[in-house]
Length: 209
Length: 209
DNA sequence: CCAATTTTGAACTATTTGGTTATATATTGG
DNA sequence: CCAATATATAACCAAATAGTTCAAAATTGG
Image (cartoon, rainbow over all chains, first blue to last red; front, side, top):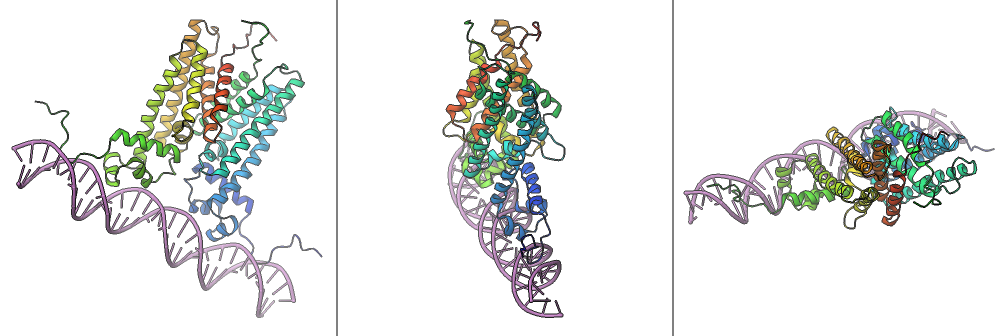
């Protein structure tokens, strides 16, 4: 006799919890952390003030949940863009293209919550989270480079760690430019050229000057 | 009988105007735009509230002045780092090194006012200013590349415009990582490697495959 | 239908914030 | 030394903001 999935006891909620968090994401994404008031969240999430505090806590708590959910979702999509294609070139270009496309999507704010807004949040936990996210992103790209060596797409002496960081730095640079209004078309072109650059074979040391 | 540089009529100001603006720069730099209150500026600039409004205007006006002064100063220093060295490699590495060093300076906030905070300001004039600053920075680097071709440091088919944008995207990426706490040492290493990368000769098309 | 439970909506309180006003203070010009 | 001028200090006010309280509403369990 399990009532595990039975509806809970009292008045049912008028909102969907994860849906409300997604709406909160849009609010923070477009207004930044400090630019957001509780009333912004109330209006944007469609949740009454007392419910908001009861269910989610204060602004900081909401932001932390938003940030973590966003990172997970975006990380999965980025990994997919990176790991799906067969050719290394398509992987790297796809990764950067995804960064540009999600940063210039119609209907969302420009830029990226993790790249543009979270770094300005003056909070130790946020900073730690971002640090590990940055490291995780680079590690993912590095793994893809290693697979590229196995597949013969790039030479065995390819500096996988260095180039992986460079790919993610490019993504950051492109994303910040998206935020200030650089057109998607321009950024997509730059993403392609960045992919070309990071795939150049390293200068071989064998032939000295 | 010119009294051009005579002291003005009434009670003398207790603060230095440009000095106060520099202090305001630090305030915005560390707290972001929306995170700053008038009281923060009053405290940080050492200017009383009524004088602040009378002399500088409201928060937006102060920020615009701060941003423009910051851009001018920083642009000049970046140009110096870029144009002083003889070798192209020293120029590009110096430019990126300067970005990292100024973004990790002790005593200032981490990151950069133009790269990290201004892009989040929801204001058309700020956005326009940033766009032109971004274009100007890339143009500066591109010019240095062209000089490098003349000097024989890079081949004549070197894609100067593309690589110039990439240099500035790297600077943005490094600067954002500085903001989230990546150590200066790490970033300086990455800056060197980024300089190496963007100076790689392009794949020559002559030899197909 | 009624008690227990949970959420909702509206109002409320204390605090912060942006911006102004009034008065005192420091300086120049005569 | 006095009028004119400009700034400084402190107090002030209205609006915005964060967070709470409380009665009404919607549901389950009996």
